[in-house]
Image 1 (cartoon, rainbow, N blue to C red):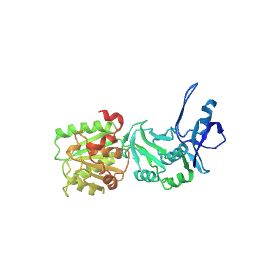
Image 2: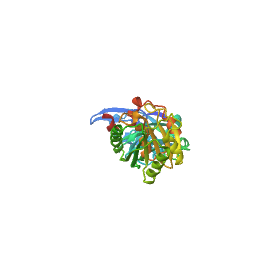
Image 3: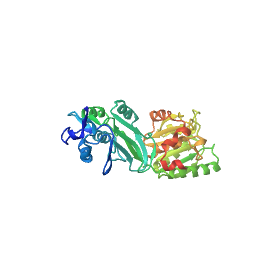
Image 4: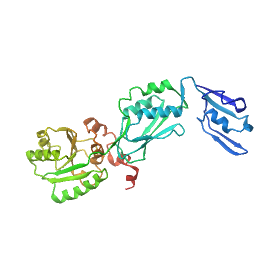
Length: 341
C-alpha cells in the first residue's frame, strides 16, 4: 500500500480503487457535522462530503493488488480461530468480537494466540482458558493491525492453526457426580460438605447423585469405585484421603481398578494437597478439607473442565500453576453475573 493526500475536488470514486481514509475527519457543513473514521472507503467518504468542502484534504491509503481491508482481514482471521459454541459479530471499526452461544467452559489454545500476535499482523485479546461462560458473553476480540493488509501475509500467519479450533466453548455434558468419604470424615461434616458440593454442582447442570461414607479398606473402596462406574457416575470426589501417604487406601484402590493416578498434589492454592486420577474418561478428585465446605479452592478451578468432558492431565495442571493463587485470579474465570455474589 502507499499513502497519499488529495483534495476532494481532485477526486472521483474511481480515482484510487479500494482506497481508505487513514485519518479521522470531521467537517462542519451547512447541513450539520460530517464525521468520517479512519478506514472509511474513499467512495463512501466522497458520497458524504458536500461539494462546498472541495478544498478539504483527505489522507488516503491506496492498496496494492494483494491488499484487503482491515475488516476483511479481521473476518478471515476470526473464521480461522472460531470453534463450536461461539458466534462472530459483524466487523465494527475493523474489529470482530467472539461471543458465546452456550454455557460451558472456554478452551483457548494460548500458544496459537501468542504466535499470531507475535506476527504483528493480528491483535487478538481473549478471556482466560478455563473460564466458565454463559451465553452472550464477549470472550475474544480479533482485529487486523492495519487498515490495509496483504492477503498473502494473512494466509501465511494462519498456516498451521487449522488443526483444531483455537477458541471454543465446551458445554457441560457430565451430570452425575458421587462423593465418597473415608474414616477421617465425621458424619456431620459429610452432611455439611455434601450440601455445599450439591449447590455448587447445580450451577453446571450437574447433580450429586451419590454420597457414601465407607471404611478405609482398599478392597472395599475399589469395589465401591467399580459399582459407581457401572452405575454411570461421571465424576467421583473423594474426601478423607491423604495424598502424602504412599499407602493411602483410596490411592491403592485406584490401582486395583486400573485407574491412572494423574497427579499427586497441585501447584494451586488453595489446593496443594489435591490429587487427580482417571479411568477411561471418568475423573477422580481427591479433596482436602478446605475443598469441602463451599470456600474457594482448586475444585472450583477443575470442576468446569471435568464436567465439560475435558481431559485433566499433568500438562494442564502444571500450566495452571501460573495464575494458581486463586484468591487473586479466580474471579477472572467466572461469568460476569457470578462475580457480584
